[in-house]
Image (cartoon, helix red, strand yellow):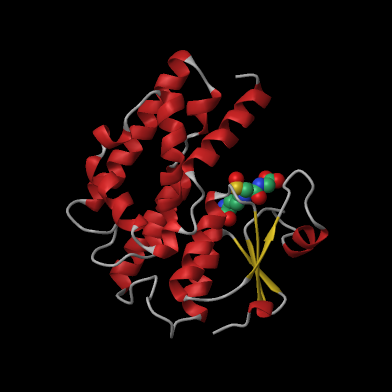
Length: 219
Ligand code: GS8
């Protein structure tokens, strides 16, 4: 197991991407140092460690930076491969599926239009969001997790979205559980894992954060 000095996570508390990394490290039982970033005034360390995108999360392992949350989660899985549980399946087909669904989440999940817009535009954004959740619900089917019996990489990519549901439901006046009951059961199943419940911020805090951002935009 890594000593905490070997491993540092640069993050911002409301980053859904950083939450993926926290969950993966918690699943593997790996200790690390945590450094909170102010994204309006980025630290020299962040700028030096992620000069390309200058974004969080960044995982610094033995002074070497790894960035992009899904890539960091894969790095964690490979580096601590002797620590259970494996996050990616060993079967190549299931592994490809897990990667596909994590990419799908990254490339398609968009929800800020729900709180950035009003009227018809907001209705369109809400419909697109619910349609996307339904695709994910369809993939879930009767399985406990996105790729099968075990919680892993694809679930880690998606679950941070769930602590935004409270804010989206209030602001968008919608009921996600009514639209996607199986997906909500999956959320509850994931939240039973300490790695998830302890890594996700309080949905009420996220709601306040979104309200602040809306105020800044004059919404
Ligand atoms: C996204 C990271 C990101 O957008 C990943 O790690 O998966 N594809 C990347 N990070 C945001 C904070 S979360 O909204 C960030 O660091 N933004 C700072 C900026 O854009 O300047």
